Length: 161
Figure 1 (cartoon, rainbow, N blue to C red):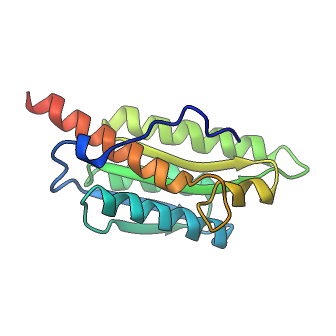
Figure 2 (figure 1 turned 90 degrees about the vertical axis):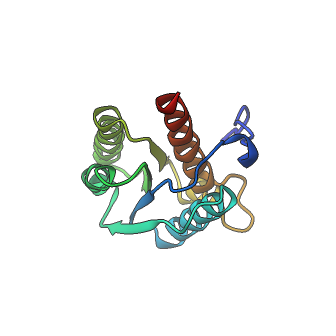
C-alpha cells in the first residue's frame, strides 16, 4: 500500500458542482471496513459542498456493477464500495475481476463516472489499513468519492463549453 502519487484534490478547484447527484452503492460484507469507507465518502461529498448521497446496500462486491448501472441512470456520479479478501480458492480472482470489469463497463457505457472504492486485499489487515478508520493509513472511500465528483465536474465543464 503506497498511497504515493495520489492527487491532492482541492474542492475550490472543482468548479461548479452544485446540483450534482451522487449515489453510493456499498457491499454488506466486512461491515466495519465498509462503514469506514462510507464515512470517508460522505466526508468527501460534504467537503465538495454536495448534499448527502443516496446509499444503496447490496450483498457483496459481485452485485456492485448491476446496482451501479441502475443508479447511473439517474445520477451524475456513482461511488462503488466493497471489500474482497483473498481466501484459499480462486473465488477471489473471479469476484475481483467480475466486479472491476462490470464497474468499468457501467462507467464507459453510461458516461457516468464510477468512483472505484472496491478493496481487493490479501488480508483483513490490508482492508482495515485502507478503510479510513482511525489508525488506517489510507481512506479509499474518500478517494473514490473525490475521483467520481472531480470527473463528473470535469465532464460538466467540458459539456457546457
